[in-house]
Length: 173
Length: 126
Figure 1 (spheres, chains in turn yellow, purple):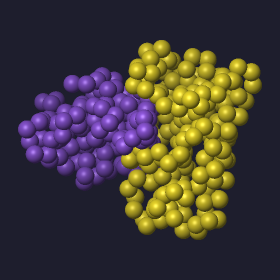
Figure 2 (tube, rainbow over the protein chains, first blue to last red; figure 1 turned 90 degrees about the vertical axis):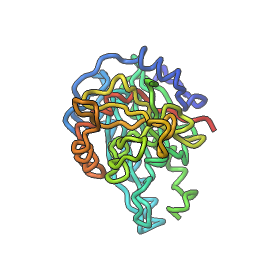
Figure 3 (cartoon, rainbow over the protein chains, first blue to last red; figure 1 turned 180 degrees about the horizontal axis):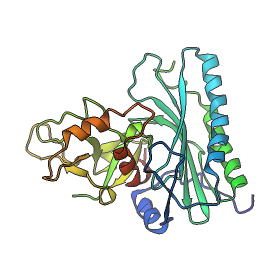
């Protein structure tokens, strides 16, 4: 796993950085199928097996969901994935509120953004609609496009989520 | 009009799809549709996360409708993204169909168009 860099100081993308990303990032898009819907395209990153990466992330999220369920038997969650022009993969688990309110469920998610020969991996626990970030400390890393490197970094980013099981959220307690 | 707009929350399909009712009924000075803002500060609380959408990348028939200032319900910086008819007005029927797919396993093709105009995620400084 040579060439790995930790990017703890820059978990936030400024608008300027986003523009740079759009201009200087992967320009090509390929037709992709692993997301929902039929008209998705993904950033070009043929060397990466996104299905495998998704599975690796979901293994950790399933363990997280089990921990939450052990503490709160009424808790329910759902796994999912998506992709956008920017995110080659957004792998997540969404936790519904205990009172049945479907507004702003809590999303534990990890996004992977190819940038040339590297991949930026960012994770957080946040409100699906509000964008309120419950936790994102140390959940931004960048690595090479090698599948093994991404898997390891993904697992690490996903594990960041495990130190916070929503105890701070009044609706989940 | 600003080219980049901010949608609070995640890049999940559900959050990039209008809500039935709330987002399908406009008000005076504000078109119905997916709510976005031209500034990050309007979109999220400090420390919050938003998705950035490039209006220039929106595929047809999606269109960004800025609020018409001067009306009671208008908010400066608010932009509703909705499907447009050929005359430029909001296609309410298609908007309703789109909103009807929220919280389902199926991503509507208009949600896919939003995702293709998604250029990143940004967090507002605390």
